[in-house]
Length: 213
Image (cartoon, rainbow, N blue to C red; front, side, top):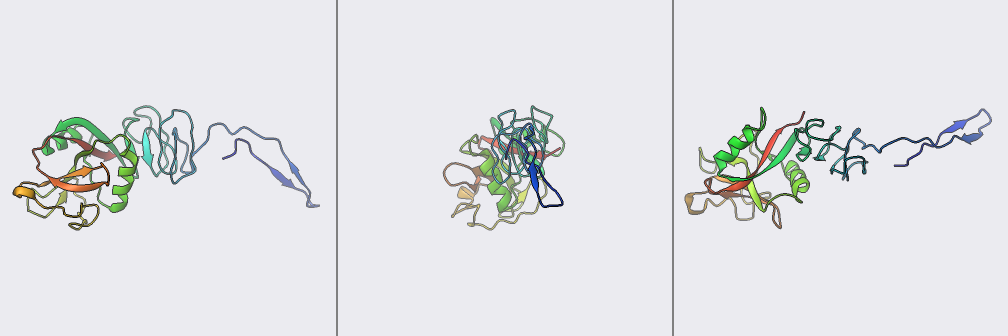
């Protein structure tokens, strides 16, 4: 994006003249003004703040898609500048290890409507994994389980489950309910990202999701 603006004024004789360059101030993402760093998939570059935006339009912390004005915690679409903005949701990595149900309680304590993350489509899965890949642990809880009915996975936030066993984003041999004791779903970011069923009592970091402001 140029720093100046080129104005061309046409006269009746089809002559043209150039105005001077006018400073436009900080760069803006295509999706709207933002305090962002890099942008992927949009027309956004480095502005104030040095954070990272992925998608069109910068925002506080990291983000994928959507316009937004970011900055420090509370001034952008997410509650904290370190949270990741994707579409209509914000995502936060909780770095304390917890079992699955405790992890869900941790997420619910963030704000109204927060749960363990529901990466309910392949597109959302890929976008979120891309956004968190530089800071995510090797694996962490997300909000899916089949504790009520074996092999009938559900998202904690009520979204429809659409993934097919042994098809991406599941690992090639998952879910396998190893030892008849794997009813909760983890997101594995290491190497090739995928989801896997795991024992619900295992202690993992966890990925939370809440509605963007």
